[in-house]
Amino acid sequence: MNRNKAFSNLKRLFIVSIIFFFGTLLFAQEQVKPLVLQEMTWTDVRDYLKTSDMVIIPLGSTEQHGPHLPLGTDYYEATGMSKLISARTGVVVAPVLLAGYSEYHSGFPGSLSLKPDTMEQVLFETAEMLIKYGFRRFMFFNYHGGNNIVQQKIIHRINHTTEAIAVAIGHGSPIQESGEEEEEFFDWHAGIDETSIMLYLKPELVKMERAEKPDIRFTPRMQELKELAGKNPDLMIVWNSLFGVPVATKKGGASHELSSNGVWSLSDPKKATKEHGENTVSRMVEQAVKFIEVWKQAKK
Ligand SMILES: [Zn+2]
Image (cartoon, rainbow, N blue to C red):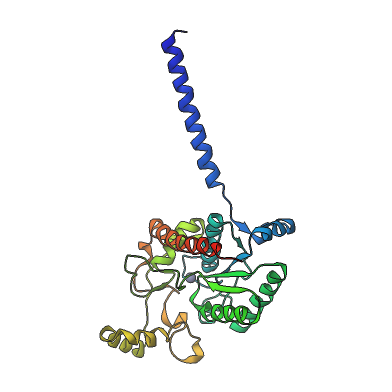
């Protein structure tokens, strides 16, 4: 072997080693798994509690999401994003409920619903157990509008009746700023945003060939308020309160009264893209991770 050949072999070996080293590093990073309570053993939990008292509880729902998205969409969104946050921060995720408060979606078959008081009680009894073991910092990651009131109540109850602290870190939380791009007007449920998120998180469950723009039927009162709110945006809070309410309230805001196929959007969900979903998910996960890292610095 001449000197030149030996040198080139050495160079090749060096390059291969570098590729192997960074490849392993990349692989190791991708291997960072979320900590999910149901997948841990009791000894894992005991060891976890030696260094952390934090837990994330996702809140979602099992309810109709149009003809193209699965009933578990909100569950997969809340749990999926909580897991991504867990993988980045090492905080345990404890999924407790598959269903949420979704009474107003029950005009479409398959939607499940728990009354707000029932949900609150189940969540509180679960929290009591976690507190017994040493968990003290609770983060609720909600991704279903119907659960907002339950989330407020459970957080208040934990903060006012136990030693633990509870906060919200999901959709609508003060730690979550909305994106730079303007949200489409009234793209609330199973529309472009949510379809995009599911194309990113659970593409195998999205039936894009069935996605279609719904026929939206605003009541005359909704229509009038919408026009008035064009000049006086404060009126949007009244407009918003007409939606997501049971049929018995006679507001016309139950899902099947409002939408021909269960999608609540004035746009076409066929315009959804995986990239848009990834942007939304990454933004929310990033903001939650930033918050958790800061909270970790505070004493237990
Ligand atoms: Zn949803």
